[in-house]
Image (cartoon, rainbow, N blue to C red; front, top):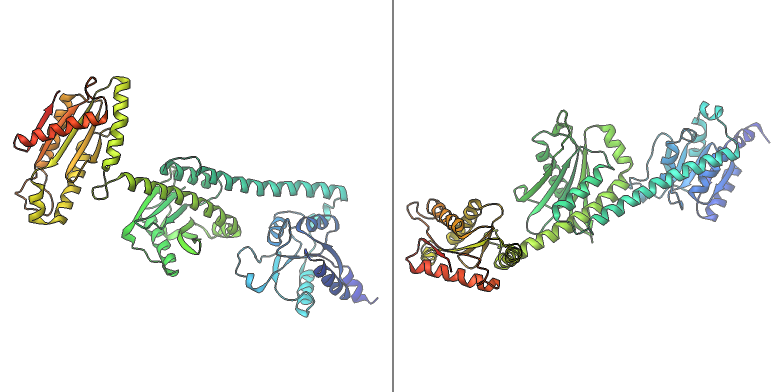
Length: 493
């Protein structure tokens, strides 16, 4: 054989493909051109043979079984004995957009035929530019040593894969724990912050009523940082043809408790994607970092991060929708306070508690005097504004343990736990005076809104059920109306 042929035979190529036909075709072609060839049918066999025969280059299919081509390349880049071996990944042209198929110093992508002149040129270029590693020459291992080393690294590799799967499972299980919305979000964000390093993490949830952006910051950020992040996300969605009004967006922010210089929005590097479910954009997920090095590290594991964020998004969105459904089913749509069903259900629980622990319990029931006249004169839109304002004023006047609900059209019910009749009377007078001094929008400033208020307390021998207690409360309001309105009537029996 000529000198050139012997030189080529010194170069060994490991070719890995799950197809036996592809392996035979490539082996024949490479041997014809003077290369020695070792074949492997999957990623794990390719790793094992790489450790034992030390090839000059690897040619591997992107879709190898067990360990695919990109993962095999990443594994080798992190190994001190393997990182200098060039790797060629065989892929299809339409897969080049896939960020998992990467090019780097020790890896390239080839999309042509493995029996073409271009393929041969690429192989020659790989083997010529390779420089033997001194560390590799100094640290040659026997077959048994390399096999043991391979097993150790293989266990490490699969442990990482198992840890990732466990992470997916743990995030999915958060959604099955029945936690409320706040606890669910906090648990998911806490789990993610332990796995991914980021400045901030954002989930944009596209709700039919009012969209929400959830932001978790692991570092202190400047005041304009969240606004900048919001702008970036809305702009990315607009590119996809999905437009949102920034003013119709609720932001739930979980700030960092750590110290240090705050991150500026000028250093915001964003990595994110819309969330597609059933071919519809349901939201957006993304992370921010401060340096190009961090961004590159994120992009190197972008496939894993995307999958992880998608799992987290589904859990958070499900909890968000469930919370919205519960809120809409128990909240008065006009005033934002409890609706009739919710306030009565709350009263049932408080009555059971009062009976069991011998506690006081009082009710305040009131309505707006001459409300029909106001509606007829100013219109129903102004009437709705007055009802919303009244609900807000009442809620601000009461204690945090008190419950306020819309009992009827212009009637409101207030539950006062652990409150006797005397203190309930004081609370009723406080509501009456606060409303009299409040300026309601949409009506003349000199026109005052007055209330008729009825007050009762739970009587152990009289109020056997909620209906009994409500019947007496209705009667107390009726007596207040009979007295000429704009007054508080306390029913003691």
